[in-house]
Amino acid sequence: MCFCKLFTMLLLLAVLTGCGDNLIPSNEDKRTTVQAGSGGSAVSQKTPDFAVPDINGTTVTLSSSLAGKKGAVFYFTMWCPICDTHMSAIQSSIIPQFPGVAFYLVDYVSGSVAGAADAVTASGYAGGVFTTLADTNHTLLTNFQGTMGTTVVVDNNGIIKMNEDFRDGATLHSVLAALP
Image (cartoon, rainbow, N blue to C red):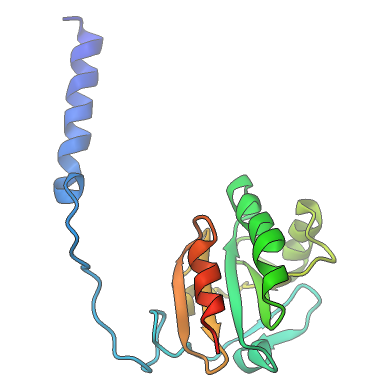
């Protein structure tokens, strides 16, 4: 056996060994339980208030995002091709079915309102159906524990109904359909 193959096998073994029990998943939910209605970022918790500028400089708060709406969706974007695929799916398949819901893109990577506005324009979302929030202080990132692709649904009482990575939109659709 040549050295390259031996090295590759040893490297693969080291990587797999580092995975621990993750190679054999259980059906056990290892997340800590939360008290419904308590403050936090988990489903059934009440989201903390926030004040974040949108790309037009208007301050968006929890109450303003929910005013007159059934709820709000916050999608955390890095403006990458994967995020674009998710945002396009939300824009074409989800938003038209839920006119009573506010939809926000959360830009936590551009670092400024102007940078977020430039990213919106460069990505082709300017003038669209999303309101883009410039999370320059990582307020929403912290409140929702969100990163690339995280999709959060908050009902009109401020209770988190979904907080998970976007996949195919089926869960998002189901959660939105269940909003009162």
